[in-house]
Image: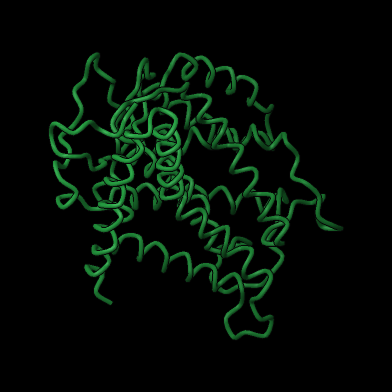
Length: 322
């Protein structure tokens, strides 16, 4: 397959974005807000692509994968996740740097999975060949999809920060969180202290994100909580599809306890720090000028648009922005 041919629809979508933005500007602020909201959703969907496809695979294979297939369901999920990763790289919907984060988090997640399944925290009830201990290898890709989302969102929304904590401090916190995932089975659980440190380090921090041209802001800690919420929802889908089960779900499915949100919030910090190793947080400078934008729709591509650039009309025409 010639992946260069995919650039053609990308270019057309960029031209369409330019035209719709111009129309929205002519209709007023409400139309501009609505169009920006749509653009925000498209970028979020792009950032969630890996994770969304993984969740879709969990459900689809649970419902329709043949029980007598030569390749068992878990091994199919592993190969499918690897294929998705390669396609995203080949089509440049994911960068090499983001793939490095995914690989690192894949390894970190797999090690934790091996330990957690060995002590009975949860289990994978189906057979497989591609596994380490009681852990099918596709589980590492599910952890990697979290890192993929953060890295992709960072690129797509051109993150800038105010009062970001020192990287050394966040690195120490991430290590402490990871160690506690193991040690709390034998020693006192340090999660209350870790939550306090997370709030202390990240509470004052604001993340500035750009949908089209203007940077907007939100508390970074709120972003962590929202992502943890969506991970918890995805976890409920995973257990409902019987991909993995907690001890309380072996006799019948029930909602994953909301208390798990705290664990996902802490795990988010580990993933975020790993992304910081590649991306490096940049402060938002006062009156920071916008980056160079394509002057005509013909010079734009969707790959550029997805990296945070958005076509605008030629000079003298007002930009599609409130």
